[in-house]
Length: 402
Image 1 (cartoon, rainbow, N blue to C red):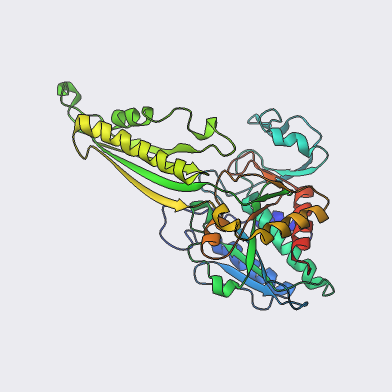
Image 2: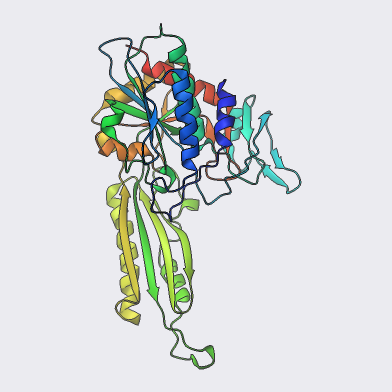
């Protein structure tokens, strides 16, 4: 099975996770892909491949060269659930520039002027959606790259390598991918997540992250007699939002600039709820963002009474740079692999999080590598077949004995 065929096989399986679920994995459908992967791994010769009771997949390729570190390769199986994820109809195009018509009937175009990364992909084969669903390259491209690499190692025992540890996680997209990851069963000295975009990139800085839930208590009165009595919870929520910095949001930030992002707003006159995610590469600046939410609540409570607005903040994950800087050899190894694959290594801050961030703080240094995809979490998602092949080349170089 070639890399492209493998990828298309994986994206055909709907694996959207569900933040509202309290099970692990959050959706049973993720286990469909997990079982498929275990079978493929065993068929390829990974005798100890298995899925545990929480839907995590593990397997190992024994060393054939002593004295090498045990290196881990990790990707996640789930996709986001806020974009349609079933019935994916991918197609392949040779990109020569300009716009790609994803769906002519609905006039859905992947425009080069909207997505500037496309200009660097001219001459490459891209797999795109039909404009009605996501693609699932995040992170089934990573799974395909890892499985392709494993198959090459098993097919050619002359390739020198240490122990290779493979892990596929559920529920990364809802921030739980590392929750029940079994470090002892995995057994790696360090690892890499294959969950990025450009194959020349190695990512070892990510956001510090928190979430916030704002509960607003209003007072509902019949609108015919509401004068000087009604306290409209939704309108109070709108005031709360307007008290936050208007340009400190995803659509106005880039690079290492953090943001406060409203992810949901619901309510009635009687009560309302707003949910936010808070992000910043600088831990101190993230604390300032938390303080802004608390200050807005305090201001409104002073006007309308204690308990009118309640803010609950929960930390999610931290910037892996804090850990990775203590293990420079892990970065050097990746940079060397990227050079051997004919590319110039680049580093950029991740404007998000990965399983690797959590795993790094759990004791497994774990930066992130690219797979050739882009425009994740939406109907404009794509993956470059050429990029996936380059990522697989880098992955193989990464684990070769030194």
